[in-house]
Amino acid sequence: MVGINTFEGGLNGQGRRFAIVAARFNDKVVDAMLQGALSALAEAGVDEEDIQVLRVPGCFELPLVVRRVAEDAIVREESLDAVIALGAVIRGGTPHFDFVSQGCTNGLMQVTLELDIPVAFGVLTCDTEDQALERAGFGAHGNKGTDAANTVLEMVNVLSAMDS
Image 1 (cartoon, helix red, strand yellow):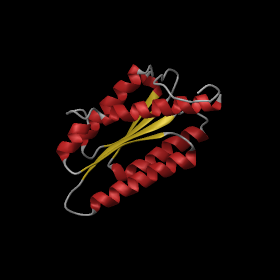
Image 2 (cartoon, one colour):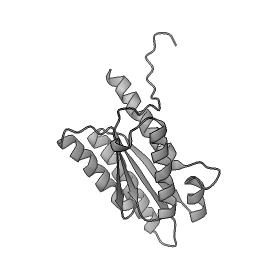
Image 3 (cartoon, one colour):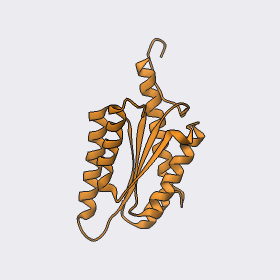
C-alpha cells in the first residue's frame, strides 16, 4: 500500500484531557467499568489531574452532562480531548429499557457529531445483571470501561494525525 495515506490512532494519552460521565444506577457494574476506564487512561500516560469524573443518576441523563462538559470546555477555551460515557441498562419487564437505551444512544451520537468531539459509548445494554457483570470485568468478556477508554485514546490520536 505504498503511497496510500493511512491514519491510525494509538493508546498514548500523554498531555491529553478527558472527562468521564458515569451513571450511578446499576452502580456495581458501572463502578467496575469506571475503574477499568481510569486504569486504562493511567496506563496510557494520562495524568490524574487531566481526568474529570462526573456522576449522573442514570443512563438517560448521560447525553446532557456529556454535552455540557464538552460545551463548557469549548466556551472556556479549555482543552478537552474526549468524553467517556459509562452506564448500564438492564432489561426488565417493561418497555422502559428500550426508551432509555435508545434515548441514551441517540443523545450521545448527537453530541459527538454536533460538537465534533469523540464520545466513547461505554453503555451496556444487557438482558440480565449477570451479562452486565460479565462485561464489567467480573467475567470472561473483559471490562467495557477499559474498552471505552481505549476507544477514545485511539480516536483522539487518529483525529490528531488527520489534522497534522
